[in-house]
Amino acid sequence: MDNTRIRNVIGYLQMAFQSFVVAGVGIRTAFPALSLEGYGYWLLQTAPISVRRVVVGKYLAAVPALLVISVIMAQQGAAILQVSPLMATVLVLVGVSSALVITALGVGLGAAFPRFRADNPSEIPMSPGGLLYMLLSLAYAALLAGLMAHPAFLTLNISPLLGSEQGNRYWVTLEGGIVLTLYTLVTVVGVIWPLHYGIKRLSREEV
Image 1 (cartoon, rainbow, N blue to C red):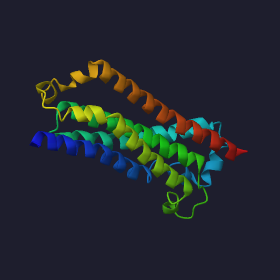
Image 2 (cartoon, rainbow, N blue to C red; image 1 turned 120 degrees about the vertical axis):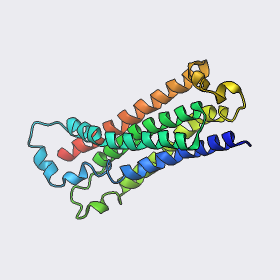
Image 3 (tube, rainbow, N blue to C red; image 1 turned 90 degrees about the vertical axis):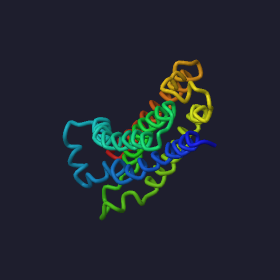
Protein backbone atom coordinates (compact mmCIF):
# COMPACT_ATOMS: atom_id res chain seq x y z
CA MET A 1 0.00 0.00 0.00
CA ASP A 2 1.51 3.33 -1.10
CA ASN A 3 1.66 6.48 1.00
CA THR A 4 -1.47 7.99 -0.58
CA ARG A 5 -3.57 4.98 0.32
CA ILE A 6 -2.18 4.89 3.86
CA ARG A 7 -3.04 8.58 4.32
CA ASN A 8 -6.60 7.97 3.10
CA VAL A 9 -7.02 5.02 5.48
CA ILE A 10 -5.84 7.20 8.37
CA GLY A 11 -8.21 9.93 7.14
CA TYR A 12 -11.12 7.49 7.35
CA LEU A 13 -10.15 6.61 10.92
CA GLN A 14 -10.03 10.32 11.74
CA MET A 15 -13.58 10.62 10.42
CA ALA A 16 -14.81 8.53 13.36
CA PHE A 17 -12.37 10.09 15.81
CA GLN A 18 -13.54 13.65 15.17
CA SER A 19 -17.12 12.63 15.98
CA PHE A 20 -15.91 11.18 19.29
CA VAL A 21 -14.20 14.49 20.09
CA VAL A 22 -17.38 16.44 19.32
CA ALA A 23 -19.36 14.09 21.59
CA GLY A 24 -16.78 14.58 24.35
CA VAL A 25 -17.06 18.37 24.12
CA GLY A 26 -20.84 18.19 23.83
CA ILE A 27 -21.26 16.25 27.07
CA ARG A 28 -19.72 19.23 28.88
CA THR A 29 -21.40 22.01 26.91
CA ALA A 30 -24.56 21.03 25.00
CA PHE A 31 -25.94 18.38 27.35
CA PRO A 32 -25.87 20.47 30.58
CA ALA A 33 -26.97 23.69 28.84
CA LEU A 34 -30.52 23.59 30.18
CA SER A 35 -29.78 21.97 33.55
CA LEU A 36 -27.33 24.77 34.36
CA GLU A 37 -30.31 27.12 34.56
CA GLY A 38 -31.01 25.43 37.90
CA TYR A 39 -33.91 26.84 39.86
CA GLY A 40 -33.79 29.84 37.56
CA TYR A 41 -35.51 27.73 34.91
CA TRP A 42 -38.77 27.82 36.85
CA LEU A 43 -38.45 31.59 37.13
CA LEU A 44 -37.90 31.70 33.39
CA GLN A 45 -41.25 30.00 32.91
CA THR A 46 -43.04 33.02 34.40
CA ALA A 47 -42.03 34.90 31.26
CA PRO A 48 -44.03 34.47 28.02
CA ILE A 49 -41.40 32.16 26.55
CA SER A 50 -42.35 28.71 25.28
CA VAL A 51 -40.38 25.56 26.02
CA ARG A 52 -39.72 25.23 22.31
CA ARG A 53 -38.04 28.64 22.15
CA VAL A 54 -35.92 27.84 25.19
CA VAL A 55 -34.69 24.50 23.81
CA VAL A 56 -34.11 25.78 20.28
CA GLY A 57 -32.33 28.82 21.72
CA LYS A 58 -29.99 26.58 23.71
CA TYR A 59 -29.28 24.59 20.55
CA LEU A 60 -28.52 27.67 18.47
CA ALA A 61 -26.22 28.94 21.20
CA ALA A 62 -24.33 25.65 21.54
CA VAL A 63 -23.97 24.58 17.91
CA PRO A 64 -21.58 27.27 16.54
CA ALA A 65 -18.67 26.32 18.82
CA LEU A 66 -19.00 22.60 18.15
CA LEU A 67 -19.42 23.23 14.43
CA VAL A 68 -16.23 25.31 14.31
CA ILE A 69 -14.28 22.68 16.28
CA SER A 70 -15.51 19.85 14.07
CA VAL A 71 -14.93 21.58 10.73
CA ILE A 72 -11.46 22.81 11.74
CA MET A 73 -10.50 19.29 12.79
CA ALA A 74 -11.72 17.96 9.44
CA GLN A 75 -9.96 20.59 7.34
CA GLN A 76 -6.69 20.52 9.27
CA GLY A 77 -6.67 16.74 9.38
CA ALA A 78 -7.17 16.59 5.62
CA ALA A 79 -4.40 19.14 5.07
CA ILE A 80 -1.90 17.47 7.40
CA LEU A 81 -2.56 13.98 6.06
CA GLN A 82 -2.73 15.25 2.46
CA VAL A 83 -5.65 12.97 1.70
CA SER A 84 -7.36 12.85 -1.69
CA PRO A 85 -9.92 15.55 -2.57
CA LEU A 86 -12.75 13.02 -2.22
CA MET A 87 -11.64 12.01 1.28
CA ALA A 88 -11.20 15.67 2.26
CA THR A 89 -14.81 16.35 1.27
CA VAL A 90 -15.98 13.27 3.19
CA LEU A 91 -14.19 14.53 6.31
CA VAL A 92 -15.86 17.95 6.10
CA LEU A 93 -19.31 16.48 5.42
CA VAL A 94 -19.00 14.17 8.42
CA GLY A 95 -17.69 17.04 10.52
CA VAL A 96 -20.69 19.24 9.73
CA SER A 97 -23.27 16.50 10.25
CA SER A 98 -21.76 15.19 13.47
CA ALA A 99 -21.61 18.70 14.97
CA LEU A 100 -25.23 19.51 14.07
CA VAL A 101 -26.66 16.18 15.21
CA ILE A 102 -24.52 15.56 18.29
CA THR A 103 -25.29 19.06 19.55
CA ALA A 104 -29.01 18.40 19.01
CA LEU A 105 -28.66 15.12 20.91
CA GLY A 106 -26.98 16.95 23.76
CA VAL A 107 -29.52 19.75 24.05
CA GLY A 108 -32.52 17.49 23.37
CA LEU A 109 -31.57 14.77 25.84
CA GLY A 110 -30.45 17.40 28.32
CA ALA A 111 -33.96 18.86 28.12
CA ALA A 112 -35.56 15.42 28.34
CA PHE A 113 -33.53 14.45 31.42
CA PRO A 114 -32.81 17.74 33.21
CA ARG A 115 -31.07 17.92 36.58
CA PHE A 116 -32.01 21.36 37.83
CA ARG A 117 -31.25 20.38 41.42
CA ALA A 118 -27.69 19.16 40.82
CA ASP A 119 -25.35 20.46 43.53
CA ASN A 120 -22.33 20.37 41.22
CA PRO A 121 -22.32 20.98 37.45
CA SER A 122 -19.98 17.99 37.03
CA GLU A 123 -22.81 15.74 38.25
CA ILE A 124 -25.03 16.59 35.27
CA PRO A 125 -23.21 14.48 32.65
CA MET A 126 -22.98 11.58 35.11
CA SER A 127 -26.61 10.63 34.74
CA PRO A 128 -28.71 8.14 32.74
CA GLY A 129 -29.42 10.91 30.24
CA GLY A 130 -25.70 11.61 29.86
CA LEU A 131 -24.99 7.92 29.28
CA LEU A 132 -27.76 7.74 26.68
CA TYR A 133 -26.34 10.83 24.98
CA MET A 134 -22.88 9.27 24.67
CA LEU A 135 -24.27 5.97 23.39
CA LEU A 136 -26.42 7.67 20.74
CA SER A 137 -23.55 9.97 19.76
CA LEU A 138 -21.25 7.01 19.20
CA ALA A 139 -24.02 5.21 17.32
CA TYR A 140 -24.44 8.23 15.04
CA ALA A 141 -20.69 8.38 14.46
CA ALA A 142 -20.83 4.72 13.42
CA LEU A 143 -23.80 5.45 11.13
CA LEU A 144 -21.89 8.24 9.37
CA ALA A 145 -18.82 6.02 9.05
CA GLY A 146 -20.96 3.33 7.44
CA LEU A 147 -22.69 5.82 5.13
CA MET A 148 -19.37 7.21 3.91
CA ALA A 149 -17.60 3.84 3.79
CA HIS A 150 -17.91 3.37 0.03
CA PRO A 151 -16.78 6.89 -0.97
CA ALA A 152 -13.85 6.41 1.41
CA PHE A 153 -13.10 3.03 -0.15
CA LEU A 154 -12.99 4.63 -3.58
CA THR A 155 -10.09 6.81 -2.43
CA LEU A 156 -8.00 3.62 -2.26
CA ASN A 157 -8.55 3.18 -5.99
CA ILE A 158 -5.53 4.01 -8.08
CA SER A 159 -7.74 5.71 -10.69
CA PRO A 160 -6.22 9.03 -11.74
CA LEU A 161 -9.68 10.59 -11.51
CA LEU A 162 -10.00 9.89 -7.79
CA GLY A 163 -6.43 10.83 -7.11
CA SER A 164 -6.64 14.22 -8.75
CA GLU A 165 -8.43 17.47 -8.04
CA GLN A 166 -11.34 16.06 -10.06
CA GLY A 167 -12.01 13.37 -7.43
CA ASN A 168 -15.10 15.21 -6.21
CA ARG A 169 -16.84 14.40 -9.49
CA TYR A 170 -18.05 11.39 -7.52
CA TRP A 171 -20.74 13.58 -5.93
CA VAL A 172 -22.43 14.29 -9.28
CA THR A 173 -22.76 10.59 -10.12
CA LEU A 174 -25.94 8.64 -9.34
CA GLU A 175 -24.29 6.87 -6.43
CA GLY A 176 -22.87 10.12 -5.08
CA GLY A 177 -26.29 11.76 -5.30
CA ILE A 178 -27.85 8.89 -3.35
CA VAL A 179 -25.17 9.14 -0.67
CA LEU A 180 -25.69 12.91 -0.37
CA THR A 181 -29.47 12.44 -0.17
CA LEU A 182 -29.13 9.88 2.62
CA TYR A 183 -26.58 12.11 4.34
CA THR A 184 -28.98 15.06 4.26
CA LEU A 185 -31.88 12.91 5.48
CA VAL A 186 -30.06 11.45 8.48
CA THR A 187 -28.71 14.89 9.39
CA VAL A 188 -32.12 16.58 9.29
CA VAL A 189 -33.82 13.76 11.21
CA GLY A 190 -30.90 13.62 13.62
CA VAL A 191 -31.36 17.32 14.47
CA ILE A 192 -35.16 17.46 14.59
CA TRP A 193 -35.94 14.26 16.51
CA PRO A 194 -33.89 14.84 19.69
CA LEU A 195 -34.97 18.48 19.93
CA HIS A 196 -38.63 17.49 19.52
CA TYR A 197 -38.21 14.72 22.09
CA GLY A 198 -36.58 17.10 24.56
CA ILE A 199 -39.29 19.74 24.10
CA LYS A 200 -42.02 17.14 24.62
CA ARG A 201 -40.45 15.73 27.78
CA LEU A 202 -39.59 19.14 29.23
CA SER A 203 -43.13 20.38 28.65
CA ARG A 204 -44.35 17.69 31.02
CA GLU A 205 -42.00 19.02 33.70
CA GLU A 206 -43.96 22.27 33.70
CA VAL A 207 -47.19 20.60 34.72
